[in-house]
Length: 168
Image 1 (cartoon, one colour):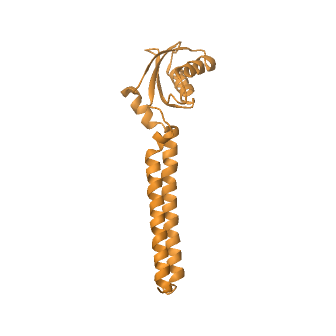
Image 2 (cartoon, rainbow, N blue to C red):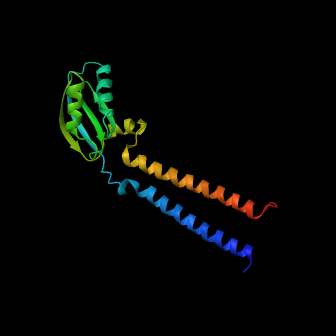
Image 3 (cartoon, rainbow, N blue to C red):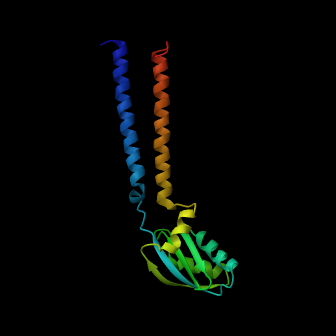
């Protein structure tokens, strides 16, 4: 076997190994939420008394959205409620009630918890910049796949130039 065919064989093996690694990382990115134990999102309905104006609603929403694990919150002063989409692995309705009751003069209590978020929260959830713990790690894994793929392509080109300096 000649030197050039040995180098070509070795580069082919490295290429296959890198592609296998990239495929594995892509699978990890796709399965990151399940692998990290992300719980199914839930929705809490809180009764919130003493909200009188739009500023009151925004204050309650802001306090709830600041809690780790809350993905969306919508307060309604007329109905005296707040709907909150949250990750039960990271927060609870008890923590939400405590936050509203201690950080404001409004009086909150948990009314119900359901599995799926209502359509009322869908718009707030999609406009929210946060994606939750699992979605964040899925994004990181996808970024790692893209970064490794780019590094592999760059390394291949550099190796090609080193082995074929004449323009191959």
